[in-house]
Image (cartoon, rainbow, N blue to C red; front, side, top):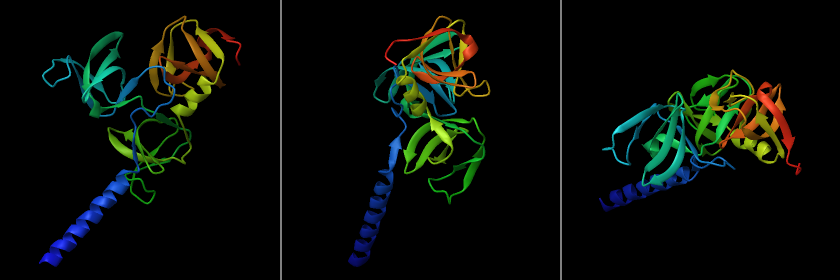
Length: 243
Protein backbone atom coordinates (compact mmCIF):
# COMPACT_ATOMS: atom_id res chain seq x y z
CA UNK A 1 0.00 0.00 0.00
CA UNK A 2 2.81 2.39 0.88
CA UNK A 3 4.43 1.61 -2.47
CA UNK A 4 1.22 2.47 -4.32
CA UNK A 5 0.87 5.75 -2.42
CA UNK A 6 4.50 6.58 -3.14
CA UNK A 7 4.05 5.92 -6.86
CA UNK A 8 0.91 8.06 -6.92
CA UNK A 9 2.78 10.92 -5.25
CA UNK A 10 5.60 10.61 -7.78
CA UNK A 11 3.14 10.67 -10.68
CA UNK A 12 1.35 13.73 -9.28
CA UNK A 13 4.69 15.44 -8.79
CA UNK A 14 5.68 14.76 -12.40
CA UNK A 15 2.34 16.01 -13.71
CA UNK A 16 2.52 19.21 -11.68
CA UNK A 17 6.14 19.71 -12.73
CA UNK A 18 5.18 19.24 -16.38
CA UNK A 19 2.34 21.72 -16.06
CA UNK A 20 4.65 24.21 -14.42
CA UNK A 21 7.23 23.76 -17.18
CA UNK A 22 4.54 24.28 -19.81
CA UNK A 23 3.08 27.27 -18.04
CA UNK A 24 6.52 28.88 -17.86
CA UNK A 25 6.36 29.16 -21.67
CA UNK A 26 3.36 31.49 -21.38
CA UNK A 27 3.73 35.27 -21.42
CA UNK A 28 0.78 37.52 -20.64
CA UNK A 29 -0.40 39.98 -23.27
CA UNK A 30 -0.63 42.78 -20.69
CA UNK A 31 1.93 45.56 -21.23
CA UNK A 32 3.30 43.85 -24.33
CA UNK A 33 3.10 46.95 -26.52
CA UNK A 34 6.30 48.94 -26.89
CA UNK A 35 6.78 52.70 -26.71
CA UNK A 36 3.22 53.77 -26.10
CA UNK A 37 2.79 57.31 -24.80
CA UNK A 38 -0.33 56.36 -22.84
CA UNK A 39 -2.03 53.26 -21.50
CA UNK A 40 -4.93 51.77 -23.38
CA UNK A 41 -6.78 48.50 -22.85
CA UNK A 42 -8.87 46.32 -25.14
CA UNK A 43 -11.91 44.31 -24.08
CA UNK A 44 -11.16 40.62 -24.66
CA UNK A 45 -14.48 39.16 -23.46
CA UNK A 46 -17.88 39.35 -25.14
CA UNK A 47 -18.62 42.40 -22.98
CA UNK A 48 -17.48 44.04 -19.76
CA UNK A 49 -19.40 46.17 -17.28
CA UNK A 50 -17.96 49.53 -16.31
CA UNK A 51 -18.87 50.28 -12.69
CA UNK A 52 -18.87 53.50 -10.68
CA UNK A 53 -16.43 52.11 -8.10
CA UNK A 54 -13.96 49.18 -7.86
CA UNK A 55 -16.57 46.78 -6.54
CA UNK A 56 -19.37 44.60 -7.85
CA UNK A 57 -21.61 46.80 -5.71
CA UNK A 58 -20.81 49.79 -7.90
CA UNK A 59 -23.61 50.94 -10.16
CA UNK A 60 -23.40 50.13 -13.86
CA UNK A 61 -22.03 53.09 -15.81
CA UNK A 62 -21.84 51.50 -19.26
CA UNK A 63 -21.04 48.20 -20.98
CA UNK A 64 -18.17 47.90 -23.45
CA UNK A 65 -18.01 45.19 -26.11
CA UNK A 66 -15.33 42.86 -27.38
CA UNK A 67 -12.57 44.80 -29.13
CA UNK A 68 -13.53 48.18 -27.69
CA UNK A 69 -10.68 50.45 -26.57
CA UNK A 70 -10.53 51.81 -23.02
CA UNK A 71 -8.15 54.43 -21.65
CA UNK A 72 -6.47 53.30 -18.42
CA UNK A 73 -5.88 55.68 -15.50
CA UNK A 74 -5.04 53.54 -12.45
CA UNK A 75 -5.41 50.12 -10.86
CA UNK A 76 -6.75 48.95 -7.50
CA UNK A 77 -6.32 45.25 -6.74
CA UNK A 78 -7.91 43.47 -9.72
CA UNK A 79 -9.92 46.53 -10.80
CA UNK A 80 -8.80 49.03 -13.44
CA UNK A 81 -9.97 52.63 -13.65
CA UNK A 82 -10.81 53.50 -17.26
CA UNK A 83 -12.49 55.96 -19.59
CA UNK A 84 -14.65 54.56 -22.38
CA UNK A 85 -15.64 56.83 -25.27
CA UNK A 86 -18.79 55.98 -27.18
CA UNK A 87 -20.60 58.17 -29.72
CA UNK A 88 -18.72 61.25 -28.54
CA UNK A 89 -19.51 60.72 -24.83
CA UNK A 90 -16.98 59.71 -22.15
CA UNK A 91 -17.83 57.13 -19.49
CA UNK A 92 -15.55 56.88 -16.45
CA UNK A 93 -15.49 53.91 -14.13
CA UNK A 94 -13.89 50.61 -13.15
CA UNK A 95 -13.62 47.21 -14.85
CA UNK A 96 -12.26 43.83 -13.77
CA UNK A 97 -8.76 43.32 -15.18
CA UNK A 98 -9.52 39.71 -16.20
CA UNK A 99 -11.77 40.96 -19.01
CA UNK A 100 -9.30 43.35 -20.65
CA UNK A 101 -5.76 43.38 -22.00
CA UNK A 102 -3.79 46.40 -20.81
CA UNK A 103 -1.46 48.07 -23.30
CA UNK A 104 -1.82 45.16 -25.74
CA UNK A 105 0.08 44.37 -28.88
CA UNK A 106 -1.92 43.74 -32.06
CA UNK A 107 -1.11 41.59 -35.06
CA UNK A 108 -2.32 42.32 -38.59
CA UNK A 109 -2.48 39.55 -41.19
CA UNK A 110 -0.90 40.37 -44.54
CA UNK A 111 -2.20 37.43 -46.59
CA UNK A 112 -5.24 35.17 -46.68
CA UNK A 113 -5.80 31.65 -45.31
CA UNK A 114 -3.71 32.21 -42.18
CA UNK A 115 -4.39 29.20 -39.91
CA UNK A 116 -5.73 29.67 -36.38
CA UNK A 117 -5.24 26.62 -34.15
CA UNK A 118 -6.96 25.44 -30.97
CA UNK A 119 -3.58 24.77 -29.32
CA UNK A 120 0.04 25.96 -29.72
CA UNK A 121 0.77 23.14 -32.13
CA UNK A 122 0.46 23.11 -35.92
CA UNK A 123 -0.78 19.51 -35.67
CA UNK A 124 -3.76 20.59 -33.55
CA UNK A 125 -7.27 21.28 -34.81
CA UNK A 126 -7.96 24.39 -36.87
CA UNK A 127 -10.51 26.82 -35.49
CA UNK A 128 -10.34 29.10 -38.49
CA UNK A 129 -8.61 30.11 -41.70
CA UNK A 130 -8.31 33.86 -41.52
CA UNK A 131 -8.38 36.39 -44.37
CA UNK A 132 -5.96 39.16 -45.18
CA UNK A 133 -6.42 42.40 -43.20
CA UNK A 134 -7.64 40.61 -40.09
CA UNK A 135 -6.55 42.43 -36.93
CA UNK A 136 -6.21 40.49 -33.69
CA UNK A 137 -5.49 41.46 -30.08
CA UNK A 138 -2.66 39.44 -28.56
CA UNK A 139 -3.77 37.90 -25.25
CA UNK A 140 -0.35 36.34 -24.69
CA UNK A 141 2.46 34.28 -26.16
CA UNK A 142 3.04 30.54 -25.88
CA UNK A 143 6.24 29.23 -27.43
CA UNK A 144 6.20 30.32 -31.10
CA UNK A 145 2.51 31.22 -31.16
CA UNK A 146 0.50 34.34 -30.50
CA UNK A 147 -2.58 33.69 -28.35
CA UNK A 148 -5.24 35.93 -29.86
CA UNK A 149 -8.81 36.97 -29.24
CA UNK A 150 -10.88 35.36 -31.99
CA UNK A 151 -14.69 35.45 -31.99
CA UNK A 152 -14.85 35.98 -28.22
CA UNK A 153 -12.54 33.01 -27.64
CA UNK A 154 -8.82 32.21 -27.79
CA UNK A 155 -6.87 30.86 -30.74
CA UNK A 156 -3.20 30.35 -31.61
CA UNK A 157 -1.52 32.02 -34.60
CA UNK A 158 2.02 30.92 -35.61
CA UNK A 159 4.58 33.70 -35.27
CA UNK A 160 6.04 32.76 -38.65
CA UNK A 161 2.75 33.54 -40.44
CA UNK A 162 2.61 36.44 -42.89
CA UNK A 163 1.80 39.23 -40.44
CA UNK A 164 3.16 42.35 -38.77
CA UNK A 165 2.76 43.57 -35.21
CA UNK A 166 1.73 46.96 -33.89
CA UNK A 167 5.14 47.08 -32.17
CA UNK A 168 6.86 46.89 -35.55
CA UNK A 169 4.58 49.61 -36.92
CA UNK A 170 5.04 51.87 -33.92
CA UNK A 171 8.80 51.31 -33.97
CA UNK A 172 9.03 52.76 -37.48
CA UNK A 173 6.97 55.76 -36.36
CA UNK A 174 9.00 56.28 -33.17
CA UNK A 175 12.24 56.45 -35.18
CA UNK A 176 10.82 59.11 -37.49
CA UNK A 177 11.51 62.84 -37.29
CA UNK A 178 8.57 63.65 -39.57
CA UNK A 179 5.29 65.19 -38.46
CA UNK A 180 1.97 65.79 -40.15
CA UNK A 181 -0.91 68.08 -39.24
CA UNK A 182 -4.47 67.01 -40.01
CA UNK A 183 -6.48 69.49 -42.02
CA UNK A 184 -9.79 68.01 -40.90
CA UNK A 185 -11.21 65.26 -38.75
CA UNK A 186 -10.02 61.88 -39.98
CA UNK A 187 -10.36 58.23 -39.03
CA UNK A 188 -7.47 56.13 -37.76
CA UNK A 189 -7.44 52.60 -39.18
CA UNK A 190 -5.44 49.56 -38.12
CA UNK A 191 -4.13 49.15 -41.68
CA UNK A 192 -3.66 51.20 -44.86
CA UNK A 193 -7.26 51.39 -46.08
CA UNK A 194 -10.90 51.80 -45.07
CA UNK A 195 -11.39 48.03 -45.17
CA UNK A 196 -9.22 47.77 -42.06
CA UNK A 197 -10.65 48.24 -38.58
CA UNK A 198 -11.51 51.76 -37.49
CA UNK A 199 -9.62 52.50 -34.27
CA UNK A 200 -10.64 56.06 -33.40
CA UNK A 201 -11.31 59.52 -34.85
CA UNK A 202 -8.55 62.16 -34.95
CA UNK A 203 -9.65 65.81 -34.87
CA UNK A 204 -8.49 68.49 -37.28
CA UNK A 205 -5.28 70.40 -36.53
CA UNK A 206 -3.82 67.39 -34.69
CA UNK A 207 0.00 67.15 -34.83
CA UNK A 208 1.10 63.56 -35.39
CA UNK A 209 4.45 61.81 -35.69
CA UNK A 210 4.33 59.81 -38.89
CA UNK A 211 6.19 56.91 -40.43
CA UNK A 212 6.05 55.42 -43.90
CA UNK A 213 3.40 55.96 -46.57
CA UNK A 214 1.59 52.96 -48.10
CA UNK A 215 -0.49 53.55 -51.23
CA UNK A 216 -1.76 56.94 -50.06
CA UNK A 217 -2.02 56.02 -46.37
CA UNK A 218 0.37 57.35 -43.71
CA UNK A 219 1.41 55.42 -40.62
CA UNK A 220 0.94 57.62 -37.55
CA UNK A 221 0.55 57.40 -33.80
CA UNK A 222 -2.34 59.14 -32.06
CA UNK A 223 -2.85 59.13 -28.29
CA UNK A 224 -0.62 56.07 -28.01
CA UNK A 225 -2.39 54.13 -30.77
CA UNK A 226 -0.49 53.30 -33.98
CA UNK A 227 -2.44 53.13 -37.21
CA UNK A 228 -3.00 54.70 -40.63
CA UNK A 229 -4.75 57.82 -41.89
CA UNK A 230 -5.67 58.94 -45.41
CA UNK A 231 -2.95 61.12 -46.92
CA UNK A 232 -5.67 63.39 -48.36
CA UNK A 233 -6.62 64.45 -44.82
CA UNK A 234 -3.17 65.95 -44.18
CA UNK A 235 -2.88 69.74 -44.25
CA UNK A 236 0.92 69.82 -44.28
CA UNK A 237 3.99 67.98 -43.01
CA UNK A 238 7.35 68.99 -41.61
CA UNK A 239 10.51 67.60 -40.04
CA UNK A 240 11.89 68.43 -36.59
CA UNK A 241 15.39 68.57 -38.07
CA UNK A 242 16.66 65.40 -36.44
CA UNK A 243 15.84 63.10 -39.32
